Amino acid sequence: MVRLNTDGTKDATFNI
Image (cartoon, helix red, strand yellow):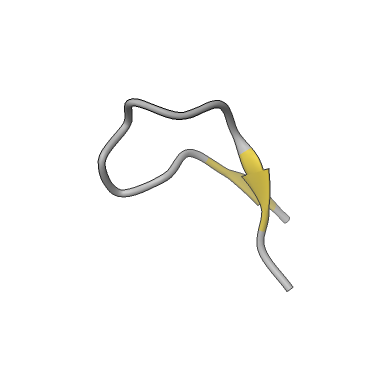
């Protein structure tokens, strides 16, 4: 699933 980081400053990351 792809979600934004909690900080929201970085690009979307893949959550394993």
